[in-house]
Structure formats: structure tokens, C-alpha cells
Amino acid sequence: MSSPTALPVDWSAAAITKRRDTFYAASQSKFVPFAEPIIFKRGSMQYLWDVDDRKYIDLLGMNVCISVGHSHPVVVAAAMQQAQDLTHCTTMFYHPVPAHLAEELAATLPDSDDWVVHFTNSGAEAIDLAMTMARGYTGNLDLLALRTAYHGPTAAAQSVTGIAGWRHAGLPGNVAFVADPNQYRGIFGEGTEPYLDEIDRTIATSTTGRIAGMLIESIQGYGGVVEMPPGYLAGAAERVRAAGGLYIADEVQSGFGRTGEHFWGFQAHDVVPDIIVCAKGMGNGFPIAAVIARKQVAQPMAEKFMFHTYGANPTSCAAARAVLQVIREENLQDNAQRVGSALLERLQQLQSRHQSIGDVRGRGLMLAIELVENRQSKAPDKTVAAAVFEKCREQGLILSKSGPGQSCLRMVPPLCLSMDDVDIVGDKLDAAFASL
Ligand SMILES: Cc1ncc(COP(=O)(O)O)c(C=O)c1O
Image (cartoon, rainbow, N blue to C red; front, top):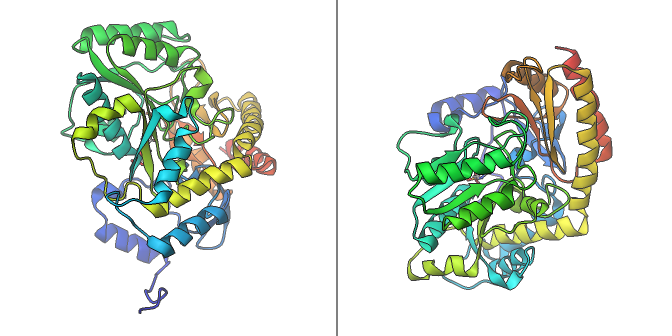
């Protein structure tokens, strides 16, 4: 048997760049946020080290995938054990690990016996499935989504993604977009009712009048950490259901304890969805996602074949079970609330010192600052956002540029971020703004 270390790996920036430039498709090479590429070699909990052994605080959580910490030993051990026993087992055959995980996910919801789970490989596949499920169950085609939403890269998930930069040619239709209830810069200003009225108007004028559902993130991720205002989710669900549709909660970024107070983001709003989509932090870096649906909503799909090759892969499912265990045993949801509140406060202090910070928002460890040209016009300032982003990198902080105008700096670190890290992040952000 060949040795696992036999393959050469060239870590030099020049070699990686050359190979990427030569062999990556244009569609995969676009997504490079920094002026100079960054090469990470290892990670532990909330920290990363680059190829030159420089340490960083990962406020991006590798695109919100690292929920409980980079290479968390409990998660890695669970996955390694399963990979050694049986790396993959198709859903055609029975295996206890995915079955346990399904039960454990259902247990996070009220009436746990009423929920069923379908595992997929990625969040976008789960979004596709949720769309199919909603259309099949309701018999209606039209879906609603928010203009600044991002729901994933597959054609169907793109079709419910509003931000132009994420939409490519040839998308399927039957989607109407409604204005996002952004309390900082939404087109109807502050408040919830005008945005709920907009849902009614959109159903009446841009659909057949009967809809399959509406997809909503309780806190928009790539949209720039836009939190749904009080009453919006419940009001939207009521209107959507009255038009024959389902409320589909996209919890890909806001689930798994990230918002602190609750395990799921929607739980802060006293409303229960009909379908929930989760991914990212669910596997702490192992690829896994799921649709969690009311039993009756999933039932009509019993008549046809729907197979995701690696859905319910036991290695990823073992990792996801370990993630749930670690969140519980290490009190990470509480930590997200406590440390997130402290970070929010530090960001608010920065806002009082730096005029370019127009807004500070978020909940738990899902936070953002929005940069503006001036506070009156609120014109998004992507230049300052990019400059702060680069300065932070120089100081060992990895952030994320988000929002339709790339004017928000999003912070979604692993849930184990500490109070000491908050001080460091606050000081370094302060220095980054001061240096501009
Ligand atoms: C809110 C949301 N939904 C869906 C997706 C799609 O998930 P994936 O990239 O795993 O396909 C993403 C990915 O970033 C997301 O942020």
C-alpha cells in the first residue's frame, strides 16, 4: 500500500498561484478577497496560521463553516474513527450514524416527532430540495425571496438569490423578490409593517396569487448581517401561508447556536417554519447539509427517487453529531451570546470614534459593521471597507466583506471566540480605522 505522505505538496505562493491560474476554471478563481493571496497551513479553534506561521484570529470562521473551532479534536476524532471503519455508506444501506443525527436534529425543534430530515452534500442542494418540496406539497410554483438574499450556487438556489453578482445567466423562474426589511437602509425606512405590506403587494402583483413559499434567513449572511425586525418572520409566515405557501427558513448561517440566545435564528421570533435548511457550521468543515421538514410536507416526495450521492455520508454525519455534542458540552451557544454581546459593545464604541462606521448590528457571533461615505447619505463605502479589511489582515484579523455593495465587514467567528480575543479584535480594528 502506498504511503499517505508520498505525494509532494508545493506550498510556495508562486507555485500555488501558477497552478490555480493554469488549472482553475474562471468560475472558481474569482472569489479571492485580498489584494495578495493568503495561504493558510493550519488552524486550531478560533485561530489560523499562514504558511509563514503568522497567527490570525478567524472572524470569518472559514465562511461560517467552522462552528466549534478549527480542527476541533472531538469532531476530528469522531470523523476519523468513522472514516477508518467505513468512510462512505450509501443511503441505500442502513447505517446508525445518520439515523442518530436525524433524531438529534429533530430534537432541536418543538414537537420533535413531527420533523423529518433529508441529508444533502451542500446548502444549495438543500435549498433546491426545499424548493422542490414546497412546490410539490403546495402544488404552487411561485416562490418569494428577499432582494439581498444569498441562497447558494446551484441554478435553483441562484434563482432565489437576489444579489446580481451571484446570479448567472439561464436561471429558472417563478421567483418574485420583495424588499428586505433592512432597518438601516431599507427602502421603506424603519418598521416592520411596510415590509409586510410589500409581501401582500408582491403576491398580488408578481405571482399567480397562490405561492409555494418564501425563503428567509433570520439574519442575512452575505446580505450583510441584516436581521429580520421584530414581527417580520411571524407576519411573513402568516401572509405566505394565507396564499397557500410554506415558510422556508434558511438557517445555513444563522443556525447551530451562532445567534447565542437560541439554537436556530428564527427562535428569537416566536415562529416555527415549515421547512428548515441547514449546512455550513453543521459539519464544522466536513461537507454536510440538511432539509428538516414537517413530516406531512416531506411526504408527497415518497413516490419519486431523490438521491444525493454523499447525503447521509457517515463520516460527515459523525462529525455533525460531534458538533452537537461539543456545542452542548462546551456551552458554545452561551459563549456566543456572552462574547458576542461584548464584541457588539466594542463595535459600538468604535462607531462612536470613527465616522465611517454607519451601522453596527447583529446578534451572538453573527455581527457586522457597515461603512458609509457619510452618515447622512448612508452611501455604502466599499473603498473604506476594503482598506480596513486589508489593514486587519496585516494585523492578524480575518474578516469578511459582505452586503450587496461589499460595504459591510462581517464577523462570524468560531463560537469558541474568547473575551481576550474581543479585546484584541477591538484594538486592532481601532488601529485599522485610525491608520486610514
Ligand atoms: C444563507 C445561505 N444559504 C445557502 C447557502 C449555500 O450553501 P452551500 O455553499 O453549502 O451550497 C449559503 C452559502 O454560503 C448561505 O450563506
